[in-house]
Length: 335
Ligand SMILES: [Zn+2]
Image 1 (cartoon, protein in one colour):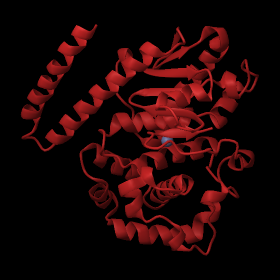
Image 2 (cartoon, rainbow, N blue to C red):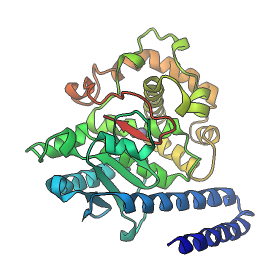
Image 3 (tube, rainbow, N blue to C red):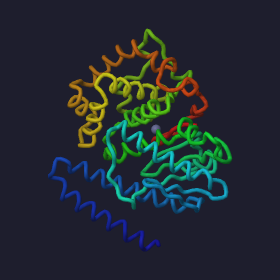
Image 4 (cartoon, rainbow, N blue to C red):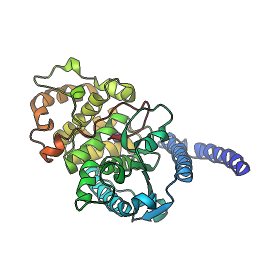
């Protein structure tokens, strides 16, 4: 195994170098090379995760492969697979984009036996309590048998939809497949994932740490440039996520779903966020921020659990709040 590994790495690097030379002269050359490296990293991580995952049973649906422990999750695996297919369809419809992938590229979903088992994947001392995570082509989630019910209750599908992480993580998966690595700002990816969750399940992440009131005091908010440059390092994670959601909500309301789709498509073509924004809305970053603040002052209440599209019980549900932040984690949804 070691000899194979030693052989494969130089061979891959050589292939990457050749690809670099071949694609560099084209406008998308840098994009293609960066994406190639990312896909390789994702494939490596996926192989490592699957090799070490204790659950040996597998259940396949059209687009997913659920890995689970048959002793505890035999009944839940099918519910998760069905929910994932529905979440994928819903997220694709909201985003206006569907990946073209073969059956051999089904997305693994790993059902973990508890919060600690999932947290352990992100290193010792991570100190977080996440319900799900998407990273490198794999959806990882705590099995519903651990947080919802030991076996699926009659309303299992509905509760998994509204209380589980599938909508959030499936959105991350689609955006990750659509936009090559590094070209989608982290705040936008989190904003889109929350926006799909809100539209489909009515869920809003609301807690004292991200409470906002009108008339709005802009000094309590992070600047857009802070979200752009250091989203994952901002101290108040709950506020950063809420602003990301509210920015996407504004973009969808002001420019429409088609423009939002065009903006992400621009990122997929290799534009940075500023240029993609200008191409689809005609706005610069400063003007976006100025208009967003004006809009927020008038519309914050609609996204504060009072008159949203989702059920009131879900909008006021605080059971999934984070207990702490996983430093540098990619795309988590919180328990
Ligand atoms: Zn996320």
